[in-house]
Image (tube, rainbow, N blue to C red):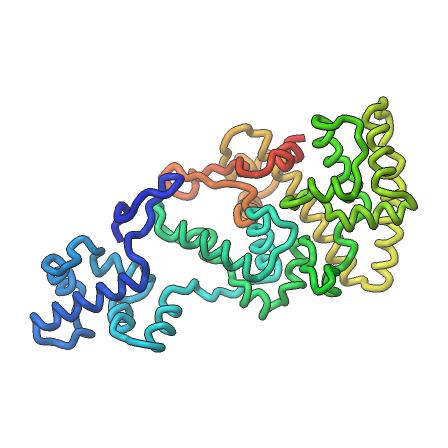
Length: 383
């Protein structure tokens, strides 16, 4: 399809002039004209006859036959056959013609897909409908871009396939996202309540206090004020988790914020005492979970190790200060290029890094941090 057939979108990409249904309608009309001129069946019209009839049809600026087949990712015969179907048969075949390839995927790939969409939306959790809506929009925006080849979003599975393969709640847990609320606002049983540890909750409260210090220095942070700061952000712990942490420490959220403010205004020779108590509670709970559910505890430990490894990887990438090649990154961190490439591809699916190509093949690709990340995430990577 011609790249300049539609208006430019934001970012310099072109929007398609014809949607799939309209394009198939044009194919049906032009094949009927070509078949009438040659006295053959419309389903037997070849690409050359179609292009000749297109020049004298009401749609001379429509795409050529080979571009139409390439756009749909199917043979020309298949496109013509679907164009001449009607009713329910047409709708079913249109879905089959335009859907993404049903490639197998692991639970790690499903979790990475869900986490990347949640990061783009800035949401602590994600419903299947929200995931599909954002994914369809991304695929539509990138399908007709000026670059050639498949996009990273084309390979992400739909929520229906994720739910059928592993279960939506389990994938949310594996991705480190919050559980979906049910009636009454309580979390589902499939998601463990200990995803946000006490130490992470206190770190989150500390971050919220730092952001609030500019506007209201020294003021205590209540549950309501923290909940307002939490809205639309996935880097802060849920207000319920912070309240639960305060309860486990035999205190309240305002008292925790008072202790953190006193520590911030002091010499800071040692970490806050509440942080040390939180680590002790986390250690006790981890031991209890390991005894009750050793497999679940092992998964949680592995997930924490992966998150820590990603942060170290992004911190090394931030030290370049410029787009770097895969071999340069591998040499800095002491990995092999294939290992580095796999990590970069996964972080790209999660929206944390960007790839730029100079036009001389994949070996000249350069990787950099995604500057669309929140400033807090970038500061954490560079610190």
